[in-house]
Image (cartoon, rainbow over all chains, first blue to last red; front, side, top):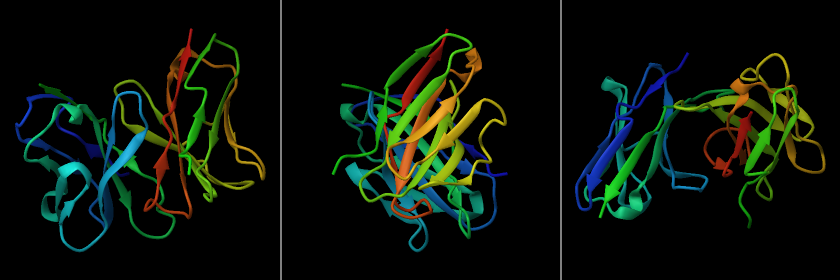
Length: 115
Length: 114
């Protein structure tokens, strides 16, 4: 079964610092990859996704992620965080192919940005 | 176009009571998915429904849990005889077609069992 690991439970950064959140998955087949964000009190929102093509994916709000197939990784990055990026971030993986609608989520990483 | 609406946002039940969680998908979406997030865990798939059909309930506990998505009205996740271990956030998502490409999540229902 697919599993997803997010290495950091809670990350605390000052504004303007750079961010990298790790995500690794276990299944070696073809996968679709997602990062979701949940701001306090709000619903999960899609930040970015990778299905195929350029392994460097750009999302909303200045976020990007790089798919490294050999490392089974899909790390999220942002060069300069803002206080408004304080939220919980979830990596999710979907095995592509017929009937593959289930997303497997990591446990999430809470990001706190200090002004 | 309203997003995925879940209600209630917070639900408190005593052990042994029933919990009913509602999810209204986005307009035009006929596919609904329920996920559960236990404390300190990631979201776990529970069930996938289309109108009047359960497509995949492989993630649902075998007892006490049921889900429906009737022809009219919201999708309902029903938990009978709740226990403390059912305390979790329950998220609903909808999509216009099967697959994860265009999945929209609701804000979730936080169920607390006393």
